[in-house]
Length: 377
Image (cartoon, rainbow, N blue to C red; front, side, top):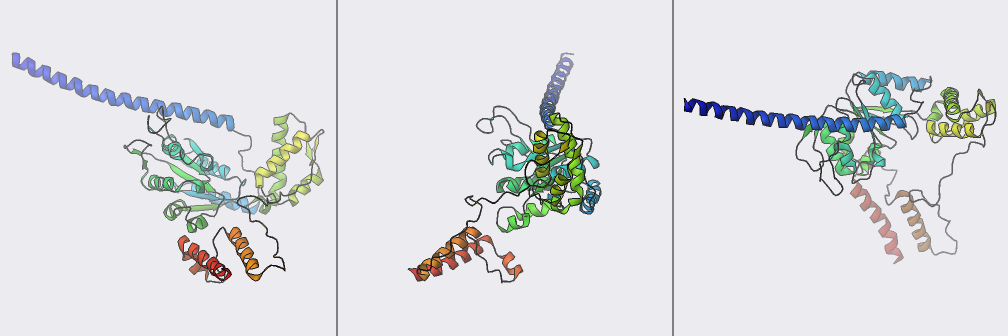
């Protein structure tokens, strides 16, 4: 009898221990889900504060209709989309349209501007971190991939990601799993990625600033947005939409646009594209003192700075009194500044040039410079 009681007691203790482990795991899962809900709530509250009235895609030009047809096609799949376009062309709106039309439309579309996050924090933003992962990590953080689980992650300015982060992003795209910073435990997610850039990523690959394997993984369905100068037929409709929205925002009673102002908008090239048009109209609405919108100043594209680090500088023509070696040296310096140290013979076959590595191009530039300097002594 006593042995049976002891056996029953032992069995009961084992069940209690097992149940305690299960309850501990369940509690940990509840805490994880609670943290995720808190993070989602904070993210969505931030989205609400940043929501504007111009989410709709305005326009009926042929080139825009072609883009929207591709949006409808790709939205029905889970394919990764890479959106190309100049700054201000509405890449985020297109990403939102793809998400909303997809089976993930009821879930969250999480956004991250890769250019707005410092290189040291971008991994934490993407993948999250555990408490104590690095100095300042006083609490656990849920990353954008986990927030977007079941939905869509929009990575704007993807070309700005550091190379080491690009490798980790590639793994998530291929295997749908990642480790938070400071953790060795993998987490699986179901996330569709839409990336956007205003750069030529193939050129970035050639320059060694972007991983070729990540480029091919992102470039499953490329989607190029036309600049506003190629959508001139859409400008009157866009202008009317922005005027109505900005008039409400600033408490103005504006019912029409002056014909001369509208014609100036149609004729302008809009280097900043739709964002440039919107900002111009907002300034005009603020300054407007009647019911007809006019432009406060002529539309003139900004001139390029002559002292910027990324802007080629104009060199003065060599003085006739200079020695040939000095003039040649000045010319070489000017060419190096304009090409950022890379010199190519543009008459060579394009395939041969594109196949050369960055190191080979730099060696070519070094040799080209060394010869004149060696003659000059």
